[in-house]
Length: 126
Image 1: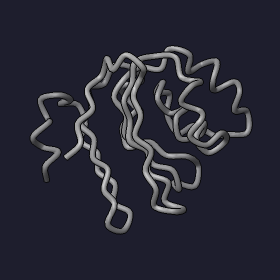
Image 2 (image 1 turned 135 degrees about the vertical axis):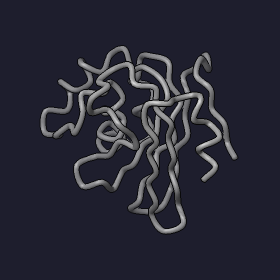
Image 3 (image 1 turned 90 degrees about the horizontal axis):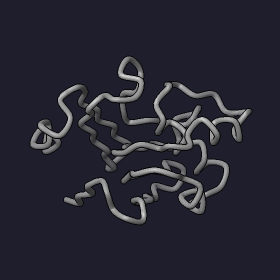
Image 4 (image 1 turned 45 degrees about the vertical axis):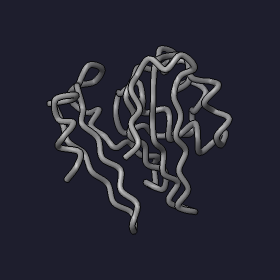
């Protein structure tokens, strides 16, 4: 598994999700919600899958804007799948923070790849 080559970037957790021939892998360094913020992250029915590196500063405010959603973790990044479900790709402009992520919408096997405007966190495609 190629994600093991990045273990030094996040030694706390290795996550892998497969949907058909689509794979998302994640190496985690646990900072916010170390007990339950393992990735990939999902919406309620697991149709939206996200791997993310970063910190969403306004996650508490964003959670309050999603009262009908049930969050699986306390991770600041857990809002991403739910925001996408509600707002589509335009939700990225709602995020205040440093981040890069890959999101898989299993309903149509489409991907959304995004990063903060400054590009603080690394984003590798391979």
